[in-house]
Image 1 (cartoon, rainbow, N blue to C red):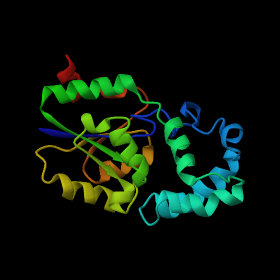
Image 2 (cartoon, rainbow, N blue to C red):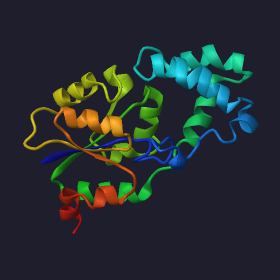
Image 3 (cartoon, rainbow, N blue to C red):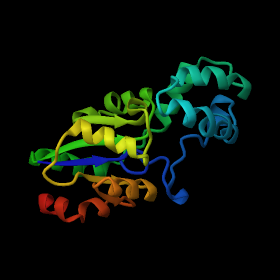
Image 4 (cartoon, rainbow, N blue to C red):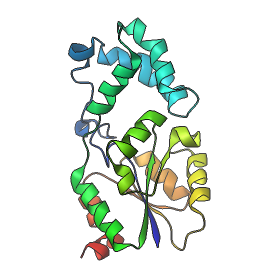
Length: 208
């Protein structure tokens, strides 16, 4: 029974990607739809309070949006903004999920999500996008209190999953995260496209 973990953005979901040319932007029509400039939102929210507080579970997403959105010109309810954001950032990588489903059907792996996420999107992924029907658990940074690729993130997961007969297999699109996972003793593969999963020897043996 081998533990296999997958990142979300750039892997299970086509959205943010370590390579800019592969990004699928959720905020392309944010200004027209919600009256919020996407550049200002990234600079004044994402790269500030979101990364510093929300993504590590020190502040709720709604509280952070309540503090930030008014100065960006948004006067609607923060919950409506969250609904817009989550709905737009849900471009699921169906071919990969099909592969994960095949691994699940084999019954010789434990499948998890390992991602930098805040609580609301983690729940959205689990329930609305139905990742909970495929994966055993979601290890997200707001739950753990640390982000990838920091060492405490991987230590928390290792403590959670317990002793392993072979190194956990992990797919992530970020080079620094892959390096961090390898330093922790995991077998980590940098994900760029579906072949990075299907051609991996352990996976390919189970798909053949």
